[in-house]
Image 1 (cartoon, rainbow, N blue to C red):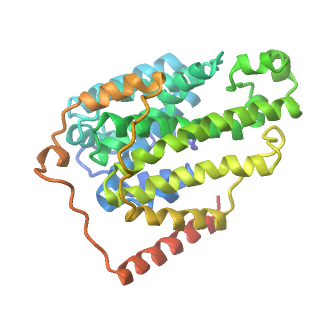
Image 2: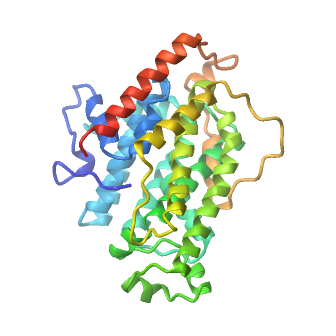
Length: 366
């Protein structure tokens, strides 16, 4: 995640307010709008019952990242986050918008503390400049900083089967691998290296020497392509998980999948040079992919096929999420989720309004 600009010395407390006041939902939405463009665009397709919880979840994750990444004392930042999580899970959140918005969600949707602890652990790995020897090691990092978010998003969509949770976590890991492939040069110039060191050595590249002088050549192109292929495999695995979601949630997650996968395709069109260039998916292309994703509204679940086992790196997340008991809508329903049907005219009106909002977002100053 790219850090936001903190408004005081405590990024997670940037929107502090007295406990007697309500949560500033506009502040949380603004945080999302100014953060991940893809996440924000995809969130517009979520039904309102999921969009607000997703915004609250994003806000806490984003500000927790900032607190560790931007803080001078990483240990103090982690201790502060753990203290706030303690308060959130007691149902007595401290007087910050992100905390107050998250507290009812972890109770209503039975979001295990283990998922947020793993997320914070991933942020610490990031802040410490940790390197990853193998793809499995890198997947373990992706499981923490992105797979956790996938699991929590699945829970607030009331999806709790082990198979669907595994696919949600793996989709998060795929997106993180795409981010890493896209940002090789940017990360290297900041002194960071996320690609598996083993892959570089196998290609005849000394990781530390290359980090001191990052240049693009056919060898680096091969490593980037290898990373994209690992992400593509996880995007394909995610198909079954998307089909298992409630029908009104499928378009948003399908949109996120398509747009992130397109970053990889754009990188390939750019010759796999993510050292000197940053692959960008145009606004028009995003709109086309989101339009395609809207068809997921009516897509039926896939025919019964053997589900692949989860990546070893995300198994602990699946175990934690699937074992949690829900006190929310999923636990209270006696039958399947009922999704309102829409007439053709209603669907066209919805799509037109969506595209208008996306176009406005794309034109907004950055």
